[in-house]
Image (tube, rainbow, N blue to C red; front, top):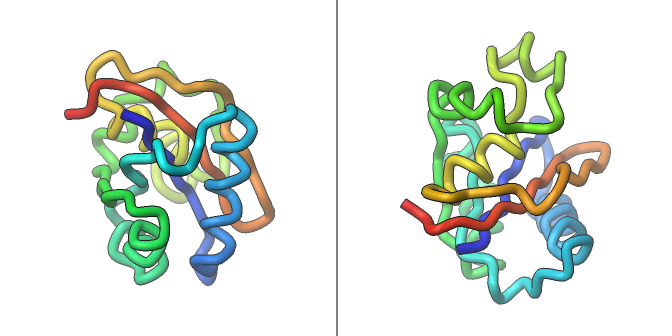
Length: 127
């Protein structure tokens, strides 16, 4: 199962999120039609841009609690002081991708960042 983990700033559009996801998939040579889920913090998962992105990419949306994201702290290569200060977790995109990838989940590489969003791609067996 291929998962895109997302972190993004308030006001980010669905177009911007789609751009960072496609950029991340492309950087790891993963075709967009293999994407099965989009994962992000539960506090962001209900923002209208996330379900819209899920519809555009034919992927389910996985809402990750901050507790589950924090549980991935030792497995994420990129740790953000800004995210840690604001949310109490070291990573959103990479941690969310790992949570949603489930058993044997692993990141394909470091997250891809734009001005408004970050995206990490993970592969795993799902939940």
